[in-house]
Image (cartoon, rainbow, N blue to C red; front, side):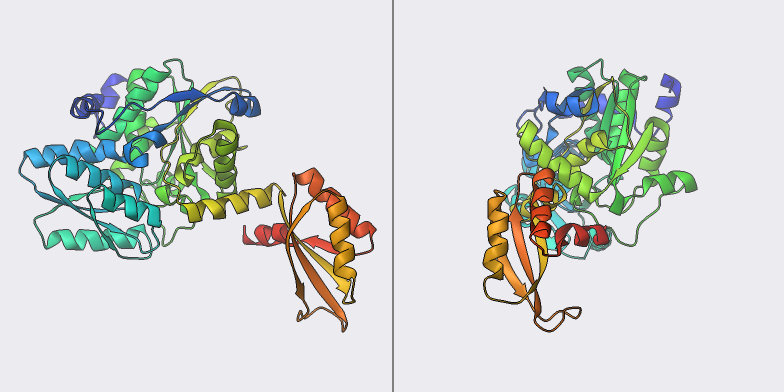
Length: 420
């Protein structure tokens, strides 16, 4: 894209540079580190540099856009702000408003992670829980603003918000000027709009790839139809990108600046979260791990490149972490749920437990199931939850139980496959 074409878009690099000047305060926004991941690089035959924006104040990039907008509005006399958010934008708005001496009321979905609710309040925001998803929460927040003097701070459909997020793109370029591909998660599109505007200005040849969760995917259809598509409902563990829609503004910028958009499943995202913990020693939320999930997916080829996945958020609450880890470990077959069909006689449980123990696996728990429709009189299922070292170990355990004469199925993988 030429410089002239870039200047016709609603947000320009000059807007981003002005935002950088406003954000020149490391108590509001700090420069986040970049680390090379040799482990991820080996998986994809590339030089992988992780941009660790999850280590930003509030645990995500959102403060950049929020402060860029709120600081200008406060200078113009605005004293109170309202926002709708699944969690990260909420914290950014709360911190920015507090820093500027203003009040902020943030509406969040009723199922928002408690950690994000608590953090928003700790940054000085007033939180109200309304709605079952982001779109419903957004509608309520906008209705409230119409009855007050407060200014609405949109999570992504705002030029000042986009310009603020664009400061991250400038930072990413200066972190690694030779980068071939940057990978950016997409929810409403504010982040990738800002980042891509900066990247394409500074390095037009750099490929910008967006990534969406399968259960919240809207960009492909929006590009095909030429208008923003809004989902009736979203279903993803990546709540930070579960907006269910983009805006006309972000669609225009994505169409102009983004080279490719890929989608990843919740299983892909869960595996990326676990891999980042194990190999990079970093804890990120689903939205933050989506970029790494894309790097590892079959839908994106980065072999031989220098690639920078953006870890955009790290606000993973402990309950969700537990669910994600169980999901990921089940996919790896490090957690098994084995259903063994038996004649319900004394000593059978002990025998099968011995078979599993001799394979060097740990039985977490076991239960009897007798009231199951397809069982004959005198039969039962024993359901073992077993910890293993991985897929090969798991298959050895299953084979040993079958060799002992018992029909056995890995129920956890069957159930998960059905769900997907």
